Image (cartoon, helix red, strand yellow):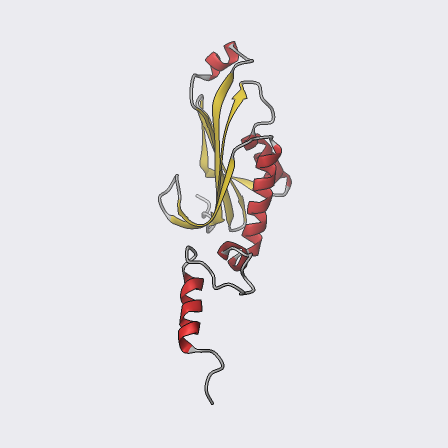
Length: 174
């Protein structure tokens, strides 16, 4: 009995499914879904929340990318989402996106991942984990130190916020 699907059409569908940058054939059920949404709905839902919380800070420039990427901290291939926000904030602006997202995730049971924590006068990095999901948040100022920003509290400074969220095996206790 012949197959109801042309083998060439099946090969094209499988090739498109394996390559997230290739357009999907029109009329498929997954037309409106990204590969990450189909493959990992839990991660996709976290990414949606992260995007909503970042936009809630009032930023005009929030960019989201879903799919495969090379990590900025550790150059490993990851599947997940990346968010980047560029804005200008005063030194006393609250809440800052990193603080808002950190408190939202912590309020939902996420814990600090010590391998991804750093702080300096120019910025902060913090990793938060929930089982095998890891989100790494970073923010940094493009100019001046904390003391210089504090001396001119009303002045606006270029502010950058970035996050990556992906599946990552939990670290063993040391």
